[in-house]
Image (tube, rainbow, N blue to C red; front, side, top):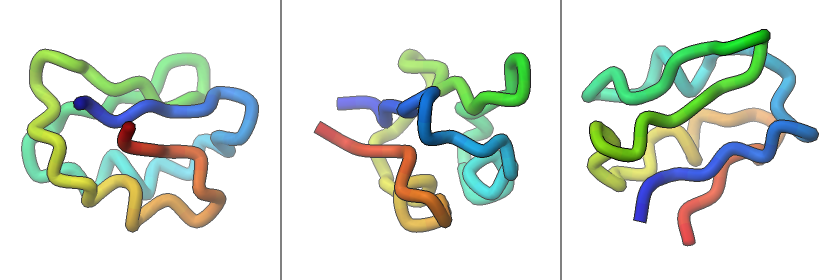
Length: 57
């Protein structure tokens, strides 16, 4: 299951963008957005997020 970003918690720091090995995360209006088709469910973004705004179900 692809990563999910809580837009209320995301601070727009871009740590997740830098951590994604397949470039599946982009910033839209200062909020991280995951491309579900590209995401490989690796969890790197979850570990990189300093505010725990990203989860894997």
